[in-house]
Image (tube, rainbow, N blue to C red; front, side):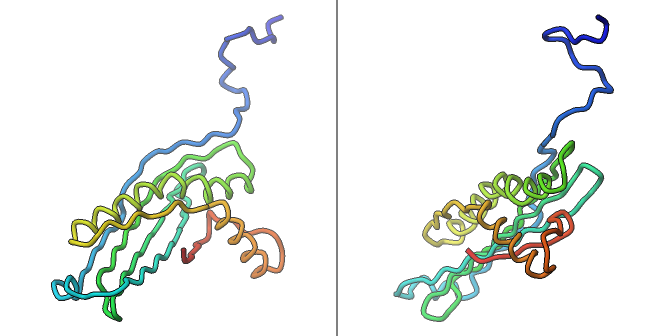
Length: 174
């Protein structure tokens, strides 16, 4: 009878726990804005060309702690001249425990960037409008599809399934 757990009773300290995921800290690691051709660029007419690049880095800090950084670089050119260049590296420290390597890898490649992206896109948007340019509403990004593509690329490079995001860096264009 002493081995039974009563309804609502807390499990013992030595009982195995299920998977855990925590957001320990979110922060801006780097931010930059340049308008190299201002103020002349404000008088230019034409359709702007916007290019966005994403970069994700994962670093293991401790057994169950990881830093995930999401970098966004947005470059706007107008008539062949750079109107602005906005860069943000949004980072966070995440705690992950009680999960297998594949689940942990997926959490680092999908869930963590999904948490960081709204902060990074807001920072980019604020810099663009503060720089005197029209707002640029950044579209949602499907990090699950990007992660799946990263897995395919890793498998092709290694000739097999494997390799974990915790020790890798991914980059892409959106």
